[in-house]
Each structure stands twice: as C-alpha cells, then as structure tokens.
Amino acid sequence: MSRRKDRVALTPPVSTRDHSAGPDGAPITLVEYGDYQCPHCGRAYPIVKELRRRLGARLRFVFRNFPLSQIHPEAEHAAEAAEAAAAQDTFWPMHDRIFERQFALDDDHLVEYAAELGLDADRVAADLASGAHRDRVREDFMSGVKSGVNGTPTFFINGVRHEEGFDLETLLAALETAGPTGKPRRKT
Image (cartoon, rainbow, N blue to C red; front, side, top):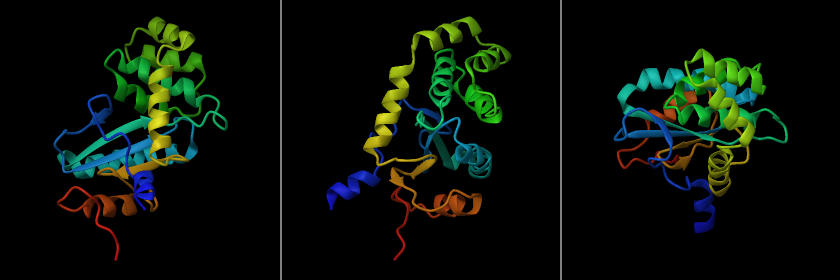
C-alpha cells in the first residue's frame, strides 16, 4: 500500500530548484508536469493562467518539464529553450511564449522567441546546440516518472496527484477544497 501511495505523491517535493510563480508560503501549490508540444498542455495553459488570476496569492504554481519526445519531437528542445531562458532569468516569459506559439517550436523559432523577449538569442542557440540544459530537463522528467506521471498534463495539488479532469471548474474546485493541512480532501 505504501508503494501505491508513493506513486501518487510528488517526488521530489517542490524546492528552490523548481520554477514557481506565486508566494512560497501560499496555502495551495499546483504542480504541472507538462510538454510544450502537447495539445492537451496547450489547452491547459490558459486554464492555469486563469487559476493563477483567480486565486492570486493563495496559489503557487510550479512547472516541471515532461517532454514526450517519442510523440512530440520538438518538445525536448522547447523545454531546453525554456531552461536556457531561465539561465537568463526569463523562464516565465519564455514558458508563456512557447505555449502561445505552440504551432512553431523548431529551433529557429525558439531562438526567435528568445530574441523577441530581449534574451541573448545567440546564447540560447548555443545552449540548444550543445544540450546545455538537457540534464535539467531530464531531472524534471525523471521526477515525473518517480511520481507516477505517464502523460501530460499531470497535476499535483499540495503534493498529491490530481486524478480528475483539468477543465477550469474541476481544477478550481479541487484547489479550493484543499484542506488546511495542505492536502486535498479525499472524497468519501
């Protein structure tokens, strides 16, 4: 039984290595394992933006890379481009740009997005070519595997896997019913 519980718990827990938006002390933490080329993640993107808007300082949102490269061949480099932007302190603007332009994720476009955001585009191009951020993306991916992630998007609320849909109302209800202990309340 503890093995099953381990598979639905977030491993490792959120830490300073994660990309997070919102206060560290927020009572609700939503973690998404996502793939920048995944159409379902593309549909989840504006939903998460709306959740962040509605919940404000009550929510900390964390994004972890989970590129499904076998079916989304540009997902790995898109994740690496986001990490290259993070190395220039611009993770969230690049994260948003990639999802907003999910239809064009080849390296030339990723470098173009970096330039549009005022990043050192040559550095991003070099990082992509050398795989400078491949290990970071792999660490996120492996943490997802350890957490039982097998598709995207996969969400965790306060460290516990969210097993229901990711439409706005379902996710909002799950977030708002997260108990005072920091764990989502279980249905009885």
